[in-house]
Length: 218
Ligand SMILES: Nc1nc2c(c(=O)[nH]1)N[C@@H](CN(C=O)c1ccc(C(=O)N[C@@H](CCC(=O)O)C(=O)O)cc1)CN2
Ligand SMILES: NCC(=O)N[C@@H]1O[C@H](COP(=O)([O-])[O-])[C@@H](O)[C@H]1O
Image 1 (tube, rainbow, N blue to C red):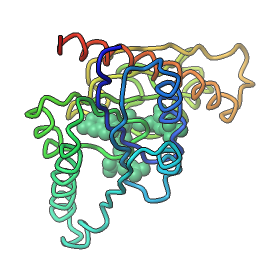
Image 2 (spheres, rainbow, N blue to C red):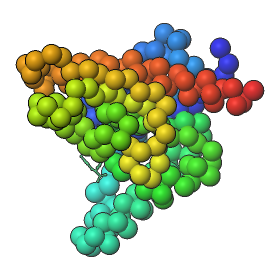
Image 3 (tube, protein in one colour):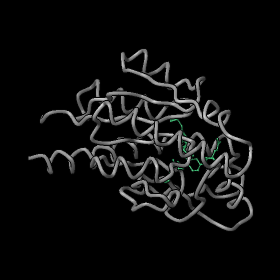
Image 4 (cartoon, rainbow, N blue to C red):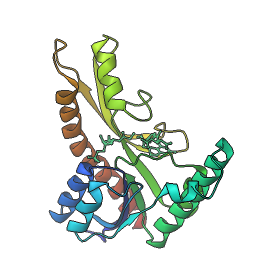
C-alpha cells in the first residue's frame, strides 16, 4: 500500500459511517489515515468513537460565534462566515488531503470552501438520497413519505463532491434503494435499510477517491 491518504472527517451525530471507515482502516482495507474527527455538536457520539480509536477530535461550536453578532439575518450570516473561516483554518492545520462529511449537519459557505480549494483539499459528502432528490436535511424521512404517497418507487444514497449548492456536487458513487412491495415498511425499518446501504457505499466511495488521490501523487 502507498502512503495512507490523510483525511479529516466531519460529523454531527452517531458516527456509524465514521465507525465503518475506522474499522476498514484498522483492517488495512482502506488506504487512509484519519488525522482528525471534527463535530459541530458536542454530544455527537461519533466523537467518542474517534476517541476510542485514538483519533484526535475537535468540537467547533457555532453558538460562540452567534453570541458575538446581533440576532439579525446579517448577524447570523456574519457569525456563520466567521465560523466557517475558523473551521477551514482548524482543518488545514492538520494538512489533510481529503475532507469527508459523514452526517455533518452544517451548510458550508464559500468562506470554508474557498480556502480548502486553494489548498487543494477535496471535500466529499454522504447524502441519503439520489442526485437532485431530497437535498438538505431529513432526506430519509422525506423519501419515505413520498413513497407512502405513491410518488416514488426508489430512493438511494450517494457520495458526492461538495460545492456551494447543497448536495448538488458531482456524484461519485450512487447506490439505489428500491422500496419494498406493499406499503408496510415503516420509517424505522426503512431507515435501518438505508443506513446499512450507506456503510457499504461510504467505504466504496471513499476508496474510489483515495485511489484517485494516490494516483495523482505518483
Ligand atoms: N455547501 C455545502 N455544504 C454542505 C453540503 C454540501 O453539499 N454543500 N453537504 C452537507 C450535508 N448535508 C446533506 O448531505 C446537509 C447538512 C445540513 C443541512 C442544513 O440545512 N443544515 C442547517 C442546520 C440543520 C441542523 O442543524 O439540523 C444549517 O446549516 O443551517 C443541509 C444539508 C454538509 N454541508
Ligand atoms: N444531509 C446529510 C445527512 O442527512 N446525512 C446523514 O446523516 C446520517 C449520519 O449517520 P451517522 O452519524 O450514523 O454516520 C446518515 O444517514 C447520513 O446520510
